[in-house]
Structure formats: structure tokens, C-alpha cells
Length: 109
Length: 526
Image (tube, rainbow over all chains, first blue to last red; front, top):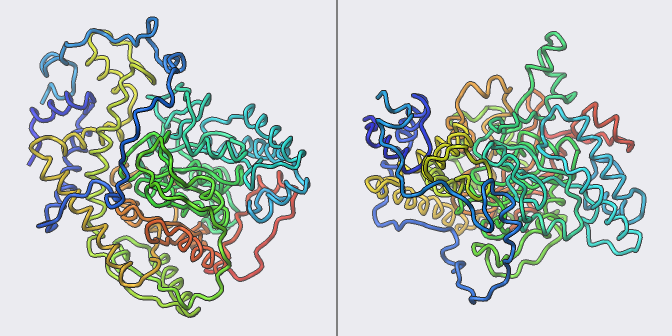
């Protein structure tokens, strides 16, 4: 049962990562096949486990005290494009092009 | 002091007594790193800062005020831990040139104890892999490839062909760290362990690899792969040293809310002589398909060793073992899909020149920055997290995870103290053979014995046991109860003493080490 091109395209949009070639698509197919083995396991009445530390109430809320920060200069150093204290991004609100218009391996499919 | 000495027992004493200085130790290690460059264990060697740290340590020793056992000790850190002022790449194009603005908590702790940070070690890209072959800086070579023990057992070919094509992998993903410790360029190294990434290369490189209980050591600053399973790993040449490292690293960190709040007390390992009160469990499902007959025999021999010494050795069952790797595959890719979303080129790391839109810039950056393995896992993870798949795969895997964790709870509740299993299916494969299968297949095969411990969050340790017929290291794994590292390491130390794993015989070491090589006189385990 192959994954449809629509789903593959959807995944490229969600992940913002490309399949690159047929090997990439095959890789996904094999991964799904592999994961399907899970369906054999009887999990009736079993609760999903988020964390092995669930019994220990690890995730606590601390007091809203500022303990560190003021490191704008250090944090900006690793950014390639910046203006004053801003990270600069290309225009937003422009969705990734549709399948037909963008350069993707999936186009031929 | 020889480079091959154990930290705790010998080097530390030598430093205190002035028989060797931190600077000398540091220089020797740096020189050895240079002459073993062909191993490709290090991505970055922080020579200047290391020497400076060594000098500062020397001052402290002169004043009679060393910070502790780790003061002046050269260590290496896997390149997925943030190290202030030093490039942290995760062996990926995505982070080439990225200079960390801060130290990971574990790095800071080591530095606070006076350790000397020699450099960052090589790994599979973003710690995804079981060979340390898939990073952008190339594969790591197992030092044992160049050992007398391996060469003696190799089928003689022409000399040049022998060296170049016969070398074996380190295992992964913390291969650089394992190779660094194994080749004596440092006394201990940090790795990370999500599915076996510390224990696997430890087994192949003949060193001790400890995966602590999840929640014991801070992950702050460890670039995350799977938040619910990642732990910093400790690689050393003997179990006592692992206990020393653990002592300096464990404990609650307010910057990592997944660390437990309980007080951690560093401990010294007792010299266990009486094992009669010990109950060792042998999980039958760990006799996995593909387990080499050699390792099976060694495992059996080890069980007998405990039995003959008076311990109770029982066969136990962890029925969901064979689903562990599948479960891991789903949970891992799902968390990876989320964790890798931070790499968009805006704040750090590689940024594409694409300027049309934010999304197209992100897509181009990620296309350029990530290798096939990483991209593959992100896409798989996103698939399992799709609305139509969420219950079927992700939640299902979380349920199976509980079943796996419960298997262990049941066994430990039945009175078993520690489990004994193989660490890997076989000894290290030659590189040319290893790369014939893709990363995902390899990981699925190689992680089978190690990753259930990550599922359940349990502590586990690889102890080098014997040499294989090919002259390569084979290790066995002990899995302990949650937060019972002291018991786990005590048993491991007893076992280590029984097996007397041989010292690697490397030409390069002989040249650099003015100490007398101590040959293991007692009969080796195999």
C-alpha cells in the first residue's frame, strides 16, 4: 500500500525537507512497513507512556524569577542575517509553492 | 604514569605527587591525537584552551589545592554537546561553523572539576546511526584495526591493501569518543545514548560505556535527538573511572526539568568479593536473531562465571523485546521530526541564500544542511504524526513502550538485581562491509540489544569482555534498576576484574608513552 503523492507532498510541506529522489520515498515506504509490526501487539487497556519518570513528578513549575538573560550580543553572533537586535527573515506569509510550481522530485510522480 | 593508566587509581595519585604535571599529560595527549589523526576521532582539537586549562590545573596542584580527582585530567566530548567558544557541529553541514555561546551542564561540571577539554569527537550526523560513518567529516576508524591483536588474525594481503581496506568501524554514534578513549588520547569521554550510542561503540572499541538512568544526568546543552530517551553517556577505560565521572556529573539541574530532584551522593565502588547474594537475570529474548555464536558462547561463559562464584543466575523473560526496536523507530522519528524543526537558518547554523519567502528559505536551508539519514527520519516522523496516523502509530508506540518498561519492572520485582546480556550482535564489521546496508537497516539491527534500556530509562553498562576470533573487542552488557548505578557498577567492576580484558597493543602508543607497558599476565577470558 503505497503512500500517495498528495501525502508525500503534504509531508514535504510540513517537514520543509525534501525526499530528494526515489530512494527517499522508498525509505519512507520501508519505514512504514517496519512500523506496521507494532499493530501486532495487543495494547488493550494500556495507557500511553510519555515519560519513564511519570511516577516522579519531575516536571515542576518554578517561581517566575529571572535568573539569566541579557545575552543578546552572544545570541546574535551566530545568526547570519541581522539588523540591530533583530534576526532578519525573508517575507513570511507566503506558503511554499504548490507541487507543480516548486522544484521537487515529486513533480514527476 | 602511563597514558593507559586508570584515572582514579593511578593518574590522579601521580598528579598529586608531582610525578607528572597536568601540562605534560595534556601535551602527551595532544601529540598522540596528532599521530592518530588517521582514526578521525576528533572533529575539533581545542589545543590552546586545553593547554591553558592544564596550566591552571598545574597552579592548583602547586598550591596543594586540586579541585578533585578530575583536576588536570584530559577528556574529550562528543560533538553534540555545546561547548562555549568551541565549534559544535553534530557532524552536520547544518551546524558547521556554529560556535556555542554556552557550555552544556555536563561540560561545565567537568570544567568546574578541573578537567582539561582536549576537543570534540566525531559522530554520525546528529547522532543518528550505529557506525559513526555518516557524519560530514567522514567515518571514524576503530583503533583496534591497527592493533597487533587484529593484524595478527587478519588474512595476510599486500601490506598497503591490508591497512587501507581492512579497517573496522567503531560502532556508533559516539564512535569518536570511544576511539579517543580506546587509543589513549584522553582518559574519559562524553558520549550520548539514545538507543545504544554509547554502549555500542564501547563494545566495539573495548572500553567501558555507561548509560545512566534517564533523569540522573542533565541534558541541558546536549543537542536533543529524542527528549524522552537521550542521556549523556560516559566512556572510560575501567569501571572505577566511570564511577568517578558519574560522581561529578549526576544530580539535579534546574536548567533541565527532566532531572530528578533527589540528592545524588557520589560513591566509591566497593571491591565485591562475595557474589552469593546477587541474582543475575539472563533475558532469553536477548538471544536475538543474528547473534554471533562467538558472543553467545561468551555470554554463556559469563553466566557460568557468576554461577560458579555463588551467584544466583536465572533465566528471565522480557516478552516485548522484539517490538522494542520498532517502537523505538516510531518514537524516535517522531521526536526527531519535532527536534529538528529548530534548524531553520534564522538564529544559528547554516542559512541558505534563498530569499523568496521564509518557508522557501527554511526548506532550502534544510535541504542543504541535512544528510539523507536525518531528512529520512524527519519525514518518517512527520508521517507517524499526521492526524490520520497519530493514534495508529505514535500513541500505539507509546503504549508498547509502557509494556516494554513493565517487562523490566516485573523482572526486577521478582528478585533479580542485574541483567546480563550481550551488547552487540557481533564484533566490529569492516567499513567496506558495513556501508553496504543503509543506515536505517543497520541501526535497526545493531540497536536491538541496547535500546530497550533507553525505552525503560534504565541504567546499563558495557564491560569489555574478551577478544573475538578476529582479534577485536567484544563486550557484555549489564542492565540495572532505575537509579541503582552503585549496584550496577559494583557488579560490573567485579566482572571486569574476573575477565581481565587485554590492553590494546598499538605502535603509536608505544612511541609516545614513556611508561612501561603492563602486559596482562593472567589468562584472558576467551
